[in-house]
Image (cartoon, rainbow, N blue to C red; front, side, top):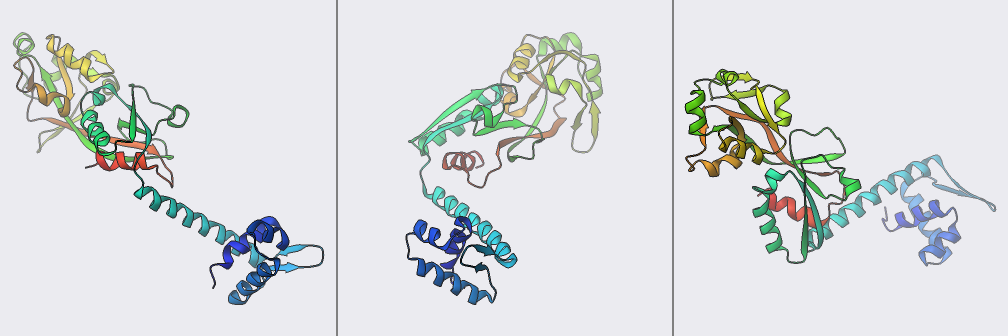
Amino acid sequence: MDLDTIPVFIKVVQSGSFSQAARELGIPNTTVSAQIARLERSLGMTLIQRTTRQLIITQAGQTFYEGCVRAMGELQATQSELESATKEPTGTLRISVASDVAHSILPPIIKTYLEKYPKAQVDVVVTNRMVDMVKEGIDVVIRAGELNDSGLVAKKLIEIAGGFWATEAYLRKAGALKHPRDLKDHQCLVLTPLSRKEMKLTNGSEEVKVMPPSRLVADELEALREFALLHIGIAFLPDFMAEDRQSNPKLIRVLPKWRWTETKLSLVYPSQKYVPPRLRAFIEIASQ
């Protein structure tokens, strides 16, 4: 099959006329006729029937046309993808992220991105609410948990593991803990979504489910950390937020052998055949 005949065939079907297709393609009418005849010979079937008054697409022609349109669409998408891989990211990348991640994990990623791509800009939207990515013009969201929207793609950034942290002053007053079940006798500071479900904890050989009594809840982990530093109670914190406090005598790990490993932090973006260079580059850097 001569692949050069495919665009001509598609144009004839779309325009409904050999002469109109010739004008739109900028070639002689005789060339269009010759191309269609060559295509039909190679396939061994009639695709288009012509009378003095009309042009009729046969059933075989309609089936072949639909397949050609799909194939050409895939080729064009692949071409765009290959071209984007060679283009330097430009324009503004809009990122929506919870405040805790914006203050911890995200800054070094953005620093690398901006240093590597000097023509790119970044707009960070710091919010703890779920955003409408299309309506608000967001390129990528960094969020914990699982996806509920099949129109989105999630690429794992990191696994989130965490534990319980408190001050020595609080533990002297409230008493030490030997097992996660002892949390029921303490003042617990918990992230709002986690206050309504059981936590699965493990020490490597044993698993236990607990629902710590939530004396104080907040939708920001940094707030919980500050409340814990005021000796109010025991705060659940992910490792990436608490590890920088391990050298601080004001905040110590409670039940250090027990960890919570139930979720992950993901890069979430709309499902699309053509991923803009700025987004593709950011995903590559963040995933390293």
